[in-house]
Amino acid sequence: MPRSLVFLLIAIFALHCSRTPPSDSKKKSIELIQSDTVVLEQGTQLFGKFYEHMRISQDGSYWLFNERIRNQIFVFKSDGSFYSVIGKKGRGPDELLTVSSFDINKNNEVAIFDGSQRMLKIFTLDGRLISSNNILENADFSLVPHYLRWYKGKLAGTIIDLDSRFEPYNSRLLALINDDGSTDAVFGKFDRFSKQDHRETFVSLLAVDEDNNVAYTNLQSSPYFQIYDLESFERILYGGEMTEAFNKPSQVVTPQTSLSKIMLLVENTSVFAHIFLTDEYFIQHMQILTKEWFDTSDYTAKENILVFYDRETNEFIKEVKVDGITPLAIQNGKMYAVENFDPDHFTIGIYEINTKTE
Image (cartoon, rainbow, N blue to C red; front, top):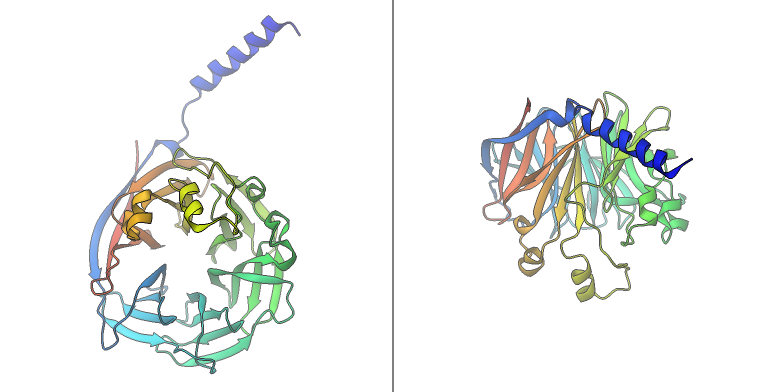
């Protein structure tokens, strides 16, 4: 084909693209409007510092946090009043060594994976033990900490195959586990981005839509996401895009890299802390690891960005920067974010997600 004709075809294609009208998804304007602020009451037990994980009961009445010093679950009512503590330190049936992940179901039962004991323990909201079972005794995979979700009486979790720890892109991705600790199904495939990522990570985030039988996963270091059907175990979509704010390290970071060098290499790079689902949106919570955050260890010094995708079309909509707060959960169209990490004044802000079509 003559070179002049090639250039002409490229020009026509570029002109066509420039005239393509934007989709309705990209015309959307998204605002976060604060509707309430709640300070958590300490009650009779002083607590240390919470991890960046929050679970909310289905009716919104109870809020659950993992207290990182004693590895207990602290339960509060939605007005901030203290309700109960689940678990205590130890190896007994109703005791915990490590709260690796936890979730609450529609019956207000709280499932806790104790990674140190490799046990699945289920409690009532007031701390009474329902069951305690060994988990993954003969499994060829390990659960990834922090991401366990109830799904129709089972628990969905992100995993890493034990023989793929140094090549995570070869690993399966998800497991369904019965409440007695037995494995029901193992399926999926790691995000292939892990093969080109400069961080050796196998942490995948997880969000479950029980009504529509789908699971969304997102590698912590990847801008891309996957959707799986929880009945057929087939992958529905591999989607997402490398957005403007996303930045990965320019050099390889390994577990053997010194801490001081890791801090230097990952400065101003992006990681994903959570993924959220609403009826309208799939939302990635991205954090930028700023020098200020490394210097102060103040969670609110991280740059927090919410990346919105349309759930119907899976199209990228836009990034929304949120200043001075750290999103923890989204439920029924409301975002719950930490405004103050001080354990003596731990403050949750509640925000409405307001959408307008421009």
